[in-house]
Figure 1 (cartoon, rainbow, N blue to C red):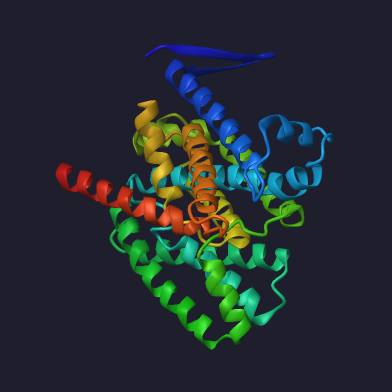
Figure 2: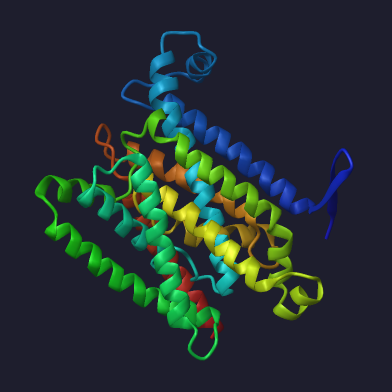
Length: 339
């Protein structure tokens, strides 16, 4: 294992060379996909025209900066948030199936958003608040139902799948009882899409996601200690109960915030951490590769959604579900072989 020491003033950080190389490649992929996203539209712009518009020159300034850039940034930030949320829950459950969408946290956040839409006006603040509360309630329910006989990763995942089914049924009932216009909007939103996202939708979500990711970065060392086993974590001074509570809160915040803006986006939180772990060949589920791969997957899926049936733009959730379903089949086959 070759280690690279990164220094900033008096602080230093030892990182595996493979992780540094992988992160660099993923950042370049993100920038390349972002440039394609800025160029793509009803009328294609050249990379030179898109870059000129970004710095405030050229004829496409409004199109690139006001219409396309918010969508590109949202895909990057939300993909990173989902990747980190997946890494958090897969570390907590120590199970590759331990993902927010599989365990019902997305469905809980969607329930909160449905309540905001049906009972109130459904402003951005209401959607963000009720989505987070819905995700937290589902996380609390899963924890309580899993405590009988002691917490285990497999028990958490199985209970989460059951809770996901129950919450999904509740969501269907809420939609059926809603007024027709609200029900149509809710069903369309449930598909998961960045269509129509603009700058006014992003300040609150970006603030929440940035805060959660920064705080999670400060906990990453303790998280890796916990991934080595409870005994190792305790002997190195890690408070496991407090750490896991903070991790769950941050994971729910990331998942619910994305759901409040774009709707449920399945499978990115499931796939990104495992892809990152395999590429980095790291113990546990590393955060940085999971975040970067989540961003790349979300950007790529959103571009595919825009291009597949152009000029009609598909919901990005349709693309992630189609690709993620294949990944889930492969993952289940791998787990069966190991059993």
